[in-house]
Length: 167
Image 1 (tube, rainbow, N blue to C red):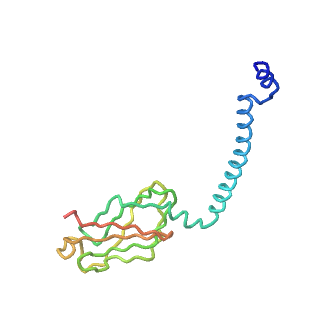
Image 2: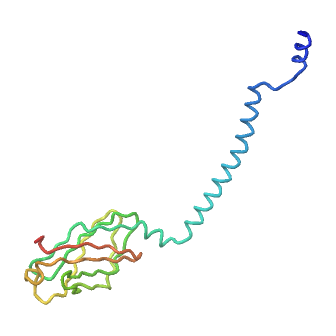
Image 3: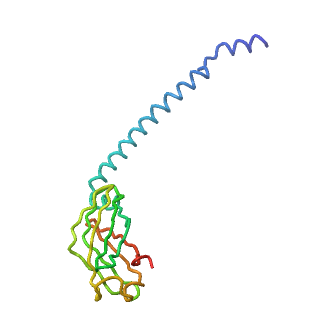
């Protein structure tokens, strides 16, 4: 019986485990690389198409303005706005409005502004309020909060609340 068993093992021919593993690895990597490169090609084509879709809307997402400082001039009706552009595109301010919060009176309404704030820059913007007194020291205007709003050419809206002389 022993001789029969040894003979049957010798006649069998098989692929060794190492060669079988290398063969399987080669098949998997070739199919996987085809799928990977095809997927990358499709993703790049989609990104390329998106870049043409709505460039103005893409730029509006990258726009960001902050109010660095707001100064109510005590001797006049002037408000000085220090505005910084922290976004990645230039911003053009198209309108400015200032509303007195307790009475909802529109103190400043300038829709004719065409003022550009460059990237990583801080600019001074002076506006004159439409108030009945000659200056901000009047108690009617002194102890109130004001909402200052800016609209840009990209359609974004930036707003803050300020009070004269931090009273």
